[in-house]
Length: 224
Image (tube, rainbow, N blue to C red; front, side):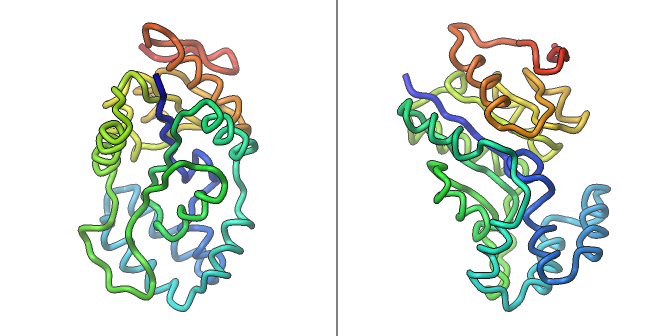
């Protein structure tokens, strides 16, 4: 039986966020930091957030985006993890609320599929295409159907409250350098900068006959 490994990107694979890195490149880091704080407090909606960002990103080229992706700080071992998943005949997917044009670059790193917000600075924003936390669950269900897998065959890796709906849906979950909010819903926790170590925890969950809770790196225990 194959497996499905779902990865959030911002804060999980990438230190920080794609939106911050794109805005830093355009010289608008402070503006977006303030906007992200407002979004975190619920004072700014997903659509309003992107309306502001897309205006700041106008004129970005593919070369600019490639430069941002390559210059961002990623956890170690991302390509190694996806290579191992592929060698086992399993599937990896990135589900991110960041722009699709950014997460698309991860296909070249070995991810089986990538899913982000269908937004672009040179295209009129369609609010229906801005991915929400609940939308991550819809993508999960589509992938399970595509690969003829069940929830037990899947493990998710995330770091923040935007991953809560996904973690509620699955028994096998790894909180990676996560917020306290998400840790409450995770089967195991990982603190560190090497995705291979977080993947080892997820691998242990989906490889067991009966999924359940497990201990995490650094002496912490998963919350029951």
